[in-house]
Image (cartoon, rainbow, N blue to C red; front, top):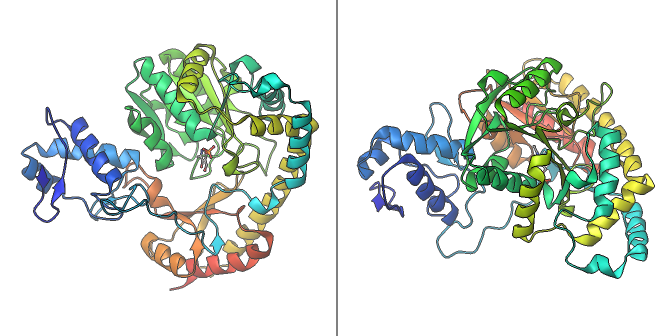
Length: 462
Ligand SMILES: Cc1ncc(COP(=O)(O)O)c(C=O)c1O
């Protein structure tokens, strides 16, 4: 079907004209590049007219795609296709190369890759290889090698107050795959929707959405997720350090959240992506420790070591172990054996803890330097920082009278400063004030201070 005279968009769309089918057709058009990244989509009125459907059908389909991160909606501006979700820009052309890293990299979600413990990792790898039995090289357990599951059960109990035994741990290819496995298990059980914090990371919301679950946004305030707005049967939360706003789930909310899960039979997915990095107080233990029967805890090596390792772990409630293990078996994507055994050895030797202690000290120092630099900005532009007690990033609110998010983005691109703007994380586009997210872990040591000067200039310049 050709849609919109100005767009000449082809939508493969058969059957009843409902919002679910329309959303699927639009998703395919975006993935195929027929709706290119950054391009406008037709107004709901124009598309409804072209398709001969109710405007509400189009609005619902657009809302769903905004929730999933395929579309970007801003109040008073046309809806556009989000960046980096198309697999090609023009039909027939090869996939676009990934964006080059900016010169000054303050994008959140990245640890300091220059500080990767190469020597400890290779020593642990050699020891692991020396102890390898021939049988270890067989297909192996889809849940992950027992040596890593045992090491993780000890580590998680000690460092994150996670109550788990190795039989309930599943090793995954990064948290992204962990979320895919959990989503599959939930779909198998008959779930049709999943709650996500608003704001949250659109790439992560796209995972359950791509597996058929409707993603619903739940507001977050200074204390964390609004428990009364949860609908279930599952909710994904970031209790230690809300992504991207940076708050910590308040203790009253933790209790409420667990009570909600117990009473409704819902599953809580705890994304503990940077829980090891707490600066102001003693570490806040994982939510999972309060309700191991209701919380699927997820941890990752992406922030403590490096994202390229693709190593993450789930500590599961008993009733989810078998479905997730089966989903992992069917995926064929078991985590690679040598990386698993090396990490197990790194943890057993104490070198993993030591690396985390060193990294925590480095990030705490950097956080102070960033906060000083922001506080030193001229009062007129001074942004208000939030979420500073933990993690590898902080959020800043932009002065509504100062430069807009768009202006900051353009300036940052020109100066080759990498940062993220809050706008792309909202599910409800009108929900939040303009702001930016600054990750301070990634720059190598020599680039940190000059990079910070470039960053402040981007935020400050008129
Ligand atoms: C909120 C959040 N959760 C989880 C992850 C980790 O994902 P993965 O283990 O797939 O690298 C990230 C990484 O950026 C993140 O920002």
